Length: 287
Image (cartoon, rainbow, N blue to C red):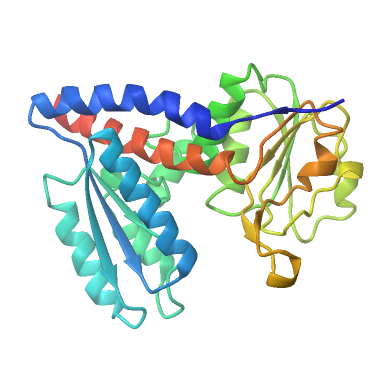
């Protein structure tokens, strides 16, 4: 068996055509969608992510504002900027690129964003709404995964889903979405005993542990759908390339569907950020 590749890049391109139409329709009503992205520090990966998000906004007809601060900026300065963006009618979505420097209270910064502009979906109010099955915004990476499953005819209803990783950004919201979709969900983490025992039961296996090539072929049920959320850079002596949490070359011989890194979940995460920003603008225009 050779798995079919889940092409997140191609799907994201399809979705962006719809986003362009929706953004243009809003612009004619003087409600052009606007996204503000705050970057603190000089983390190279964060700089790439922010650059990609700003470029995606431009391509979709979304106004974007990039605000960059040095790593030693006072937290109060960033909080004051968020307060100003909350009151800015041009801005419908606010995103703080994570991780933040160590002297920041990350949760306090995320909670400072107005829930109706929290297009990352990380505010406690929005996470609570997601838990109740009535989300205002779905966190972008889990949202992208669900879109990938749907576009490839994978219905979670009645399936065994296993998530490796319990982060607030991916693991937990991913579990909630799959539960609401009717799957039986297991969340594994660093304290899980006999991880492979759980992963081998999965009809849908989602790897979000942040460990390069961690999921190997012997950990995958034949015919499973495998979604790789991880993005890791190998050390120079190993080629320095990007890779996921899944050992792609071996797992593709066992799974029925598998997402690559790069070109899988990453483009879908950005696409869903655009979707949330446009949705926020549409809500504002409808008021």
